[in-house]
Image (cartoon, each protein chain N blue to C red):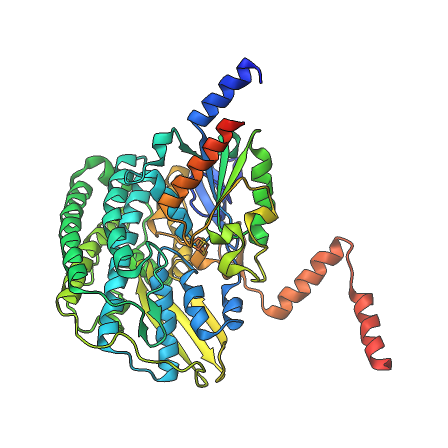
Length: 144
Length: 413
Ligand code: SF4
């Protein structure tokens, strides 16, 4: 790796920007993601910031199973993100489809539409689990 | 740009101001909103249909996941309907516990809303403050039910977990702290000039319009409509506790803020009464696996307004039909009205002010035209069918000859 890319990688790990996207979740995982960012759990201490647009984001945090309406949009949002990009699936239903598996309007987990880097199960995944997942993802990036 | 120039902008399904996938197409003239078209359905998962394929007991947990913020509302509403069909009279301790969780849920939901509303008007300090305090009630909920969200407390015939004396003590202490914090927020909301100025006169919904558009919950109560299922048609233990229905006549976003904040104080009142008068006895009775044939409608005052569940049983293990009408669906019509002729910049807070929950709502689609608000179109099932055939035919896909062949094939064979 060249020096420049080393620096870029270092900066990225120190301050990854998140984009949160609800792909059909029941909202519980979403509020737990927000809870993880607020004072009690304070995910922001890892330099993480929630961003509004895919073009600024390094990590896409998805919650919920992929509904048929959202599928195209999810893929489009993923494609709009700059490389390198990572996807975190929060909650059992974004990992596998969970309770909604088999519903006519639901495909399955996030990985049925886009590649996923980290899975955080739980219904809903607790903020502690979310922090754990994010930190594990970041430390795996360090090794690269 | 020329003054008379009109244009349309799409907002969503992914947008920084929206927490859930829904999309709005906004017709604008300059900064002014001419009309809003709301497109729901991104979150539609097909829960009602899935309910028909699972047993009554499994459905309790499935309807809980209609919405994670008011999960107890949906599961209570559902079990109440099932209990009514089966003719089950649940023990009074179970009723009290249901009420307790319901009010704790209201506290967490209203605090959450206050934070989100603060965020939408650029007051992020409020978001951080309220969400920090919200953790107090989350801890209590986790202690009582074992989970922070999606409590799994209800079962057909009662509740699944009992609470003991030490838990009651913890909860009373937590309620004291929360009450103090809430009083502080009320003080901020009623004295902080920036909040008052930003929220007053925004998203106005008059008393008449609230009735006409069938608004529910805090949205209606902030327009002076005294409607609360807890009082009008008491369920669980609400008949035994005393509390006031909060109304306000500001009829705008400010009024909705005040109503929710004052409702928090009422919730604390109810929680205290429930904890102090918790009757002894069992927490559940045994429910049959098969529910006798029949149907029932159950109403419930969720944090966002009236939630209605309809359940029909044909005597088997699985329901024949489950229908859910979540409060946001009732309120979303009012949003269109509130936004008309307002500024685009008000949109996030006006939408947030009904405390929308689109994962609750995404089970119906309304087609309406922007140019003329009255020209609405509700399609019946055969019309929708014909429309879809036509839509495909225009794109060169035609199954009619195939269908004919199939039919003929059936006749000859
Ligand atoms: S995993 Fe559970 S809590 Fe999370 S979105 Fe899915 S159903 Fe809701």
